Length: 484
Image 1 (cartoon, rainbow, N blue to C red):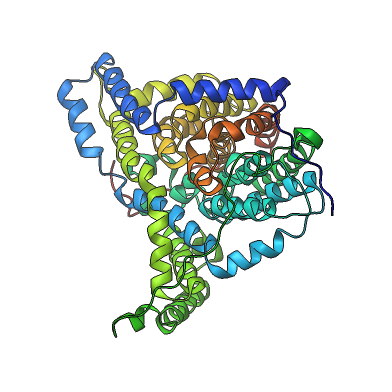
Image 2: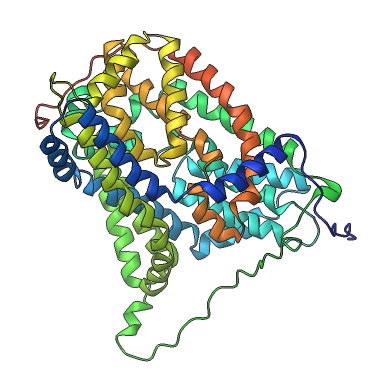
């Protein structure tokens, strides 16, 4: 089949895409690493507490005592990335990706196909979505019978994180609110435990997710470059060779177990047995809302799919660098949350109390929902961490929701749907995907910014309209909940 010759020069971008490229260049030049934002956030919160009348000792005590409050949750969020990566890079999934890459028949359909699958997989695990989407984009780009814009494919692969990840099972905020041990004591006293039946699996949340998937897929389809505007991976000098590493020779008797399929199979059977026991003895929602259980299943799934301990550990080694930002940033978010909620001023009020009063003054109903969504989206540009940012926001946002009698489960989902928006602008969570695609953030932001401009008003409309279908339910505090 004869294909059009690639353009020798990239055509100038126009309209929103041109604005996005300018913004991407500015961001890459002036935005420091997200860790710097976390450091600065701690300093700003500490200064705000001092200005609020808190004593220096109260501020430093809150900082130090709260620094490790999220140790368990930090590890859990790092494991979301690690387990998703190991499953996505397993041989069975690689074969599935190779078959899926043959499905689309046109360039625009290929882009929308990647976007749809990326978002669908993200509902299960956002870490899996990033790597799966990136590998699918590369597989489609290797096809010789069709010219597809590689930048648009890459942006489509990111849509799982840019549109619906926080409405799915690996949502940091929803997982935290459903796990008693992960909720800081001060927050637990405000919200109680909110299982997925009150957040992820409400019909309003599922409808929002479905609308965003359809909307995003259509935007990806109609914004895909055509004709001479297409820039393929070859045009961008991207190496598409994904050949697996050659198997190492077994030189020692002890290495036979490292290449054995018996141990992974036995661990897989144990996991299946445990899962059956959980579903038999516990309510369905409590089982699927368990973050530890969720991670156990995905970790063992990765082990079984890779087949041998050696191959699994090689995949884990490649996945670990993607967890670095979580490991070093979440303790800082924990410290910020502690200062916000524990460093009392001269009037006995904390920064969290003042913020709660401000949001409460907005009143109930659609206005409260829209303001919370806008606030979350703006803060997310500077604090690109769904779980860490929730721990900073939740104490005063959820207290405000209680004061104005906004449904607490829907408040979590307002945060979740709005929290994904800044991912379309801030390239922090693109980093693992960019490593797979071998592209730069500026190559994708032109397309993701277009998604952002259309998503924003739709999201605000949805949180306002659907919020009116809820009724307030007082939080149920567990009897064993520790005092804040």
